[in-house]
Image (cartoon, rainbow, N blue to C red; front, top):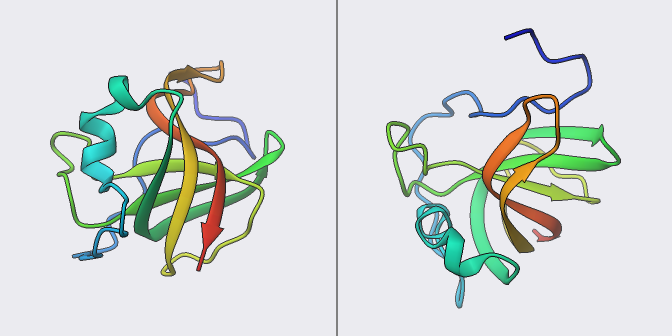
Length: 124
């Protein structure tokens, strides 16, 4: 495949930030739980606490961040969760995100997400 055009989100994983251990938000889910339950959660609003490992601003009218909490594994591709938001965060921050779960989201040009959190509200 061709490289992504500049300024477009790149599907997949953020760079490995090393070991992460973030406690699950009260009443929330882990990153791996969102992946595992994505079909059941589609269209629902969830809470997820995680460490921001990647942030991309102003792409397709929204900001994109990747969260990890130490759950899941790179091998099973359930350790990283992409979130879209209007808010700005800094990589390394631990945040709680309240957002709507979307599954099998296709933004075109090869940008397909099995699960993504949209319209995220960030609590620092």
